[in-house]
Image (cartoon, rainbow, N blue to C red; front, side):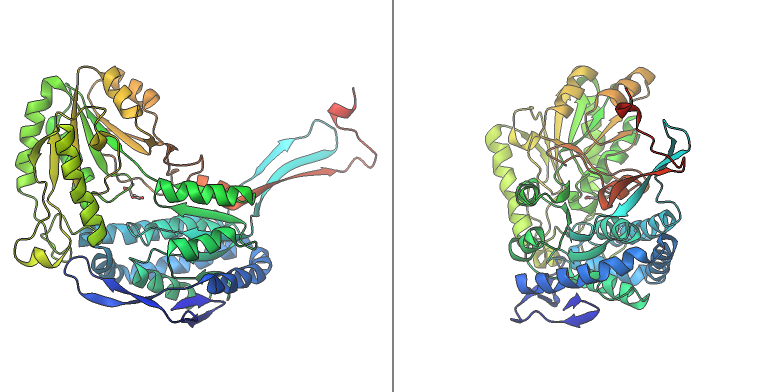
Amino acid sequence: MNYINGEWKPARDGKTLPNVNPANGDILGYVTVSSPIEVDEAARAAKAAQKAWAKVPAPKRGEFLYRIGEKLRERKENLARLLTKEMGKVIEEARGEVQEAIDMAYFMGGEGRRLAGQTVPSELPDKHAMSIRMPVGVAGLITPWNFPIAIASWKIFPALVGGNTVVWKPATDTPALAYEFVKIFEEVGLPKGVVNLVYGSGGTVGTAIVDHPDIDIVSFTGSTEVGSEINGRAGRLLKRVSLEMGGKNAIIVMDDANLDLAVDGIIWSAFGTAGQRCTATSRVIVHRKVKSLLEEKLLRRIETLKLGDGLDESVDVGPVVNAKALEQIHAYMKVAEDDGAVKLCGGHIAKEGELAKGYYFEPTVFTDVTRDMRIAKEEIFGPVLSIIPVDSLEEAIEINNEVNYGLSSAIYTNDTRNTFIAMRDLDTGIVYINAGTTGAEIHLPFGGTKATGNGHRDSGIAALDVFTEWKSVYVDYSGKLQRAQIDNN
Ligand code: UN1
């Protein structure tokens, strides 16, 4: 059911889609599929509520977020279990994701007491100059299934603390979690119309959000193809658009690296969330001198990875989100083979026993991958890793930087020179030294360069730049006309 203007109601034409557990094919429920009519209702409600919400003092808006954080904390285990059932990530990671939303609630709650602008000297006597943050208006938020609560929190919380109201379209693969999240907003007494939830497809509901005249800003996380389409449509309407899209993240392993540490980072970043993080590692760019030793250690670890239902605490790699994703990942095996990559392990849909009921793909590694191969360039969004050998740091950085995307990158090295060159020259929005490509913390900007984004950032204070508009204020208390310096020459 949608949540519009403080009421739960089904979409008018009553269409639904099943919500399937990717671990075993069980149907968990049905998701409402809405039309532009519901988006219109939600946008009007959000617009009607916005002025009053903006007048609630920002510290009070922040207190709503604290209370939301408390509720999330109380329900962490249940939410995590639902998350695992709905999209497949293993329970430990699901708990981590709920924690990410909790952290974001407290962090952005605190921003209610800051929302800092600047106070600067004026060039004239008896004049005060400052900038303050204003709400943008109504925020249309379109969020993905891979971090259904964390990414929603990255967008909803800064929008709210900044004085905006929200129309939120969650992914159709993760409707139940969105329902639980919005229930919490309702329970803490958020005024009606401040957060509105509209379920439905990107093509219909997403497009209606982007086009709606009452929606002032659109924030989207998802594919580059869709993001680019949104940017075009919303750009023509002069709306602000914040986009968080694909990645082709690499870990560089230098010849001086601690290889065991590197293996830990690679396993976690490449096969955690079954490779379905925007930040997942899908390339290892390794110095040729340590390539075979690294491969040997990597394979030994991959053999120990257990595939299965993420609710089982002993499972390392859960299913991928749905049948279509499984097929798309599988199709890359042929692409890799045709391009001449050498398969080290995996490569198949896993079907033994209980696994046959869900959408499982074996952790897969290709080696001797060259920079021109499709698997070295395209986002696969599954547990598939390509190893690319190189002879120097310069070559490694060049290969890291030559893909279209620029979200996250990492280097394993113990050399200070390598470290600082990498920090400077890796062209991604996030860079890790001696850690994998995943695991960004919520109080720093999250986002990327090139086809990964459009210059905005989720998370951190940077998110407030997305959800607020600057106003510069000059107060002249001289009691006479004072021309600005430019008009006084
Ligand atoms: C994503 O996959 O879009 O940095 C988000 C990380 C997580 C968030 C990933 N904190 O891996």
